[in-house]
Length: 222
Image 1 (spheres, rainbow, N blue to C red):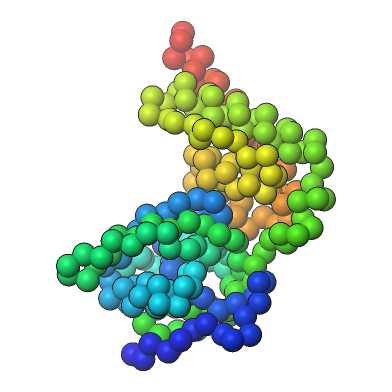
Image 2 (cartoon, rainbow, N blue to C red):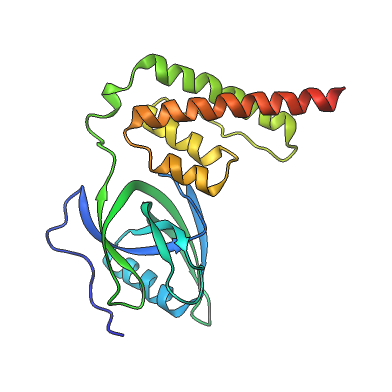
């Protein structure tokens, strides 16, 4: 199958054409994702991304599997950039990626061996943070700090991040990364727009999670 370029000359910061990688993963901006690339179609895709300095989109699988026939992705995912590549002798690769921004798939193309899509960035980087009430950010920060502390007491190997973001968007993303909830619940968070609604939903989840963990700790001590 011909490997035609997928980057569009009229790409904008908010709408562009990128390769898509359906996985059993929900990734948030700011998160890191190591991947073992072994299927030929994804070797081709990563080669394209490296040659063109292109990001690609990580999207949760809605129907299908990671290997074999092309899976059907969810409509919302996260674009990632490639930070590191280790090329193996047989053509496989180990790569490390970092989440950049959330996007919505507007159109999927299947003319290559891997999926590509026209996507729209979901976050308004310039104005959205200013509209978030400080009280909402402060409440999220307090509950998230408690969540990390409680989790470290419950789980021996739990290691809280060294720093907690001050920026409301970065905070919301870090909470999404760290919450121990199902992929379905994480996908719902990833799809929650705007930022104020995302923080509000995370407050509800953190409140519930903190109660559950505190109950488990109390039961262990009795």
